[in-house]
Length: 367
Image (tube, rainbow, N blue to C red; front, side, top):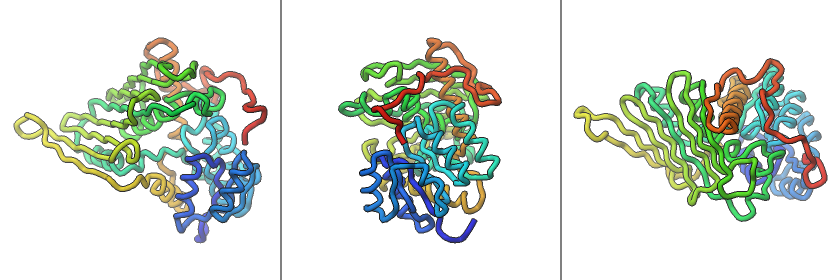
């Protein structure tokens, strides 16, 4: 990799795409060359604000010779298409989670990146929250011993007109709260416990009129190791909530909060004492502003420069989508146990397709 700064294109300038832009321009090893958004005025304003070129046509951005890395931050429907085009153009790609609407949709990009030896990463920035990183480090050190179970509660209550946003439209999002926030938890579960063998789940549309999408998902997952994991992801929480727990034979780890509206990020470490009574506990607070995107970006560009595979790479993110599809299948089977492995054939075709036929949105194809 050349020693000069990496040229970057950002496709999609919603609230999260703009957060990505700020992480890029704050890093001395990356240089923002161009931004793209389907709304020309949004692209133009961002270009003026950040001092770079702009376009309403993402195809023009991904083929530029001064672009080494493409960040894809669009509605889920377009993530796989743009990622594949960028990889075919020889670019490294950071694509926002969930990476695509189905596992079959993203597999061609995964295989192409592997053939071309390009870095492909899904944006699972929760791995870079300090409390979660420290929890994973402590687990790997064997602090809690053999893992018994994991559980996570994650969600918020939405906002006015939430049912009209793109993330609640089946053809644009592919799924509801599971593919929005729940996949972060699935990625964390796999990061810690490895692959899962069986799934049992339920989904509901409890409040928002978004059926067949879900505003709540309840899932039980059994890892190949025997560990049980439970997930409740919700768009109907009264308060923003994030709680992530690991429990083992010697102790436990509990992360609460993610900063901002989710409260101060905190890690609790509890360990069985010599008397076998109430555990000894230690608390660690991380009150600084959330820098997970900045740390994720630094890690990614280091991988690009050094030729290393990034965390939550394309293959891993594909497996996370497979696990999400197993949850959807279990929910549609009214809580029946579903085997999570071996769900995609060699051509990448999903065993079942939850998506309706492709339709146009607002009268035109979104780019």
